[in-house]
Length: 61
View 1: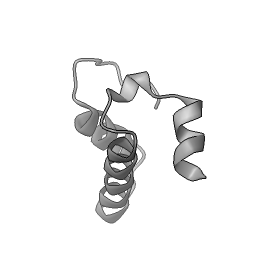
View 2 (view 1 turned 30 degrees about the vertical axis):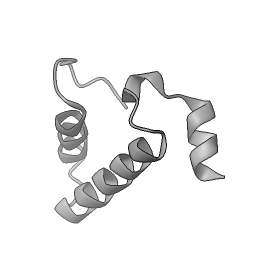
View 3 (view 1 turned 90 degrees about the vertical axis):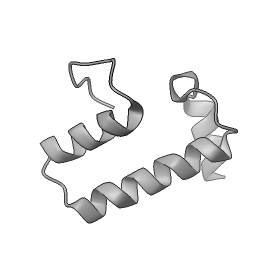
View 4 (view 1 turned 45 degrees about the vertical axis):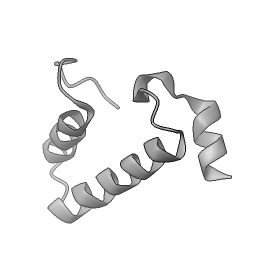
């Protein structure tokens, strides 16, 4: 995710900020957030910063 200038924001707020800066619709925001949450739960809810390419491949296959 691109730097938003504030690393103290929760993941949800960071996602919301980037989506709104790019002027995506609210429905797109909700859809993205749904899949982000689904992915984090699939990984067993570790901290999102600890996940990388390996975890993404596991999720997609």
